[in-house]
Amino acid sequence: MLEKLAERVYYMPPYGETDRPTLGLISGDNFSLIVDSGNSPAHAKDFLKQVDQVDNKTPRIVAITHWHWDHIFGIQTMDLPTISHEETKKIVDYLKTLKWDDASLDARVETGEEIEFCRDMIKREMPTRNHLELKSPDIAFTNKIEIDLGGITCVIEHVGGGHAQDSSIIYIPEEKIMFLGDCIYQDFYSGDWSYDLNEFITLVDKIKKYDVHIYLTGHQNPQTREEMFEFFDEIIRLGTIVGKEVNLDKAITTFIEKEKAEPSVEQHEYIENFINGNKKKR
Ligand SMILES: [Zn+2]
Image 1 (cartoon, helix red, strand yellow):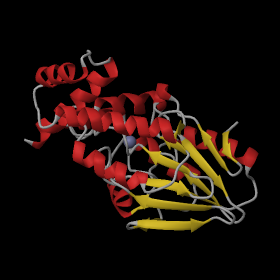
Image 2 (tube, rainbow, N blue to C red; image 1 turned 90 degrees about the vertical axis):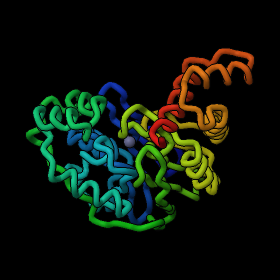
Image 3 (cartoon, protein in one colour; image 1 turned 30 degrees about the vertical axis):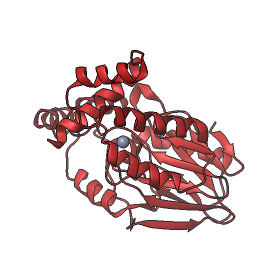
Image 4 (cartoon, rainbow, N blue to C red; image 1 turned 60 degrees about the vertical axis):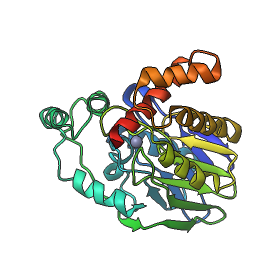
């Protein structure tokens, strides 16, 4: 069964073993909107089966948060009108021209176009990929689009950010719920996982414009406003401590001087993310 977040808002929790992201359902009187298409035909089918149990009357559309494989590989299987930011559509148009068999994936990891993590997860979710067919979104928007589903609304806004420049959020004003996709996560497609402080602050400003009670991210459980704001503050605080430093040991020393404590494993990782970001800028 889908998890129910509000009267007309449901989600399917993420599954880390094969990197299945959170999928959402906003059920209107005239239309329902599905958030992201899943990371495989099987994921898309599993989700649609569960959608049928809570919402079987209305026509459906799909909205895509960003171009990463785990959010778009189910578009073809869902077989519904699909909407995305214009940049997302452009990238999926390109991904359609690629081959997804083991040899092709391995070759792209060699050249750095694909990353090991995604290749391994793609293989785990779909041991063979003969059945995999990519489809591009049908409808593209530029900045922001509002969809009246009948009794409930979805505002889709492009917010960008380091994780994927095409990232969009999906906001449901009636319920004060926001689907963030992966936009708050690190950039992991250009070398070592990284954060950029200015980019992150710009992103958080865009997210905070909306009045939200519950946030859904692509790969975590739902989070309250307090939990999410605490995370934003922590990331910005760590990024500020790192500053323009490119040496990890020096940044850790600064942290210990300021905090009078060793960083936790998580904090250490975020500090390293900012160091990696600074190195890329040089
Ligand atoms: Zn992603």
